[in-house]
Length: 433
Image (cartoon, rainbow, N blue to C red; front, side, top):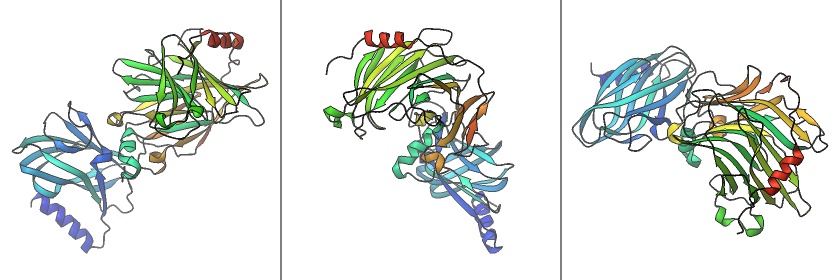
């Protein structure tokens, strides 16, 4: 009995016996990654020609299940042989023409993500195949599949980046936040390229650490313009965020793509395992704008480094919406896991009183909310808040969960605010426009 005939026979038998055969067409565009081999396109298998490349497709089942796997696509010229590996089982398939190419049955023993690795073995044409979907069917009643299902709003891109996750900190009732302090540690091995560990978020911007390349890491501080656009060139002059000052070696400019505004960053070789401190302030000014300033402290140092001070027009407020987040901004690395640990959060109000922030709510972006990616978690571990995403791990944490960390047992931060203000006032002013 051929594999193709077996697949069709199983489907027909299921229908004849009244057993529901649930199908999931898992698009390569939003669920596959180049996990081995170099060069070429970094998504899907639409120009798959080199045998050293492994294309991996990921989907999740919510229970133990008996599955049938097949590939949908075509071989434009000639014929090919490929190898597929899933759950330790190896399949080989001959591909020719177009349509559905069965791989075979697969038993999954528990809920979680299934990874299917595809590798070319032989081909007579220019490519092994041009594949669009991994087709998964099951007779296991009630089975639910999770994967990036559509490309509306460019969800294939956002889904491949992985789910963005956040911690929103509760500010004590009746207090107004002027300063926000946080400590951030990235565990060893949880720092793939294209990661952003955002420590000090607020209603108008964000401040944290990035992995920008194999040899470059940054401390990034940005403030959005009050004018809503993804193109900074469209911002009217009277709604532009302007830089008042920046620290030594800090680079400044504009950003776009996810809103627009003023951006600053320091190229800095932060390391996993080290604890870094972030401090930012919002101070309304009499002329109808607010000044946002960020300082950074290296692990093991007592000196605060100025990153930048921005003036945001048409704004009259202190800090609101204090939060942290974790995201991947490289869609080619969305299959790799990352984690950030956020500790010892404090807020200083406009009366000069410090408040320890111990309560947080866990939320996620559109990809997380739709259940398209379930590799997301947040909570309290070893007395500190944490966020985790990517890597297709199991045991997702429910969105909107609320957590309380234990008191740190530490006194409020001891900071010479007058000195910080003097430093900011005396540093490099922004170049004139």
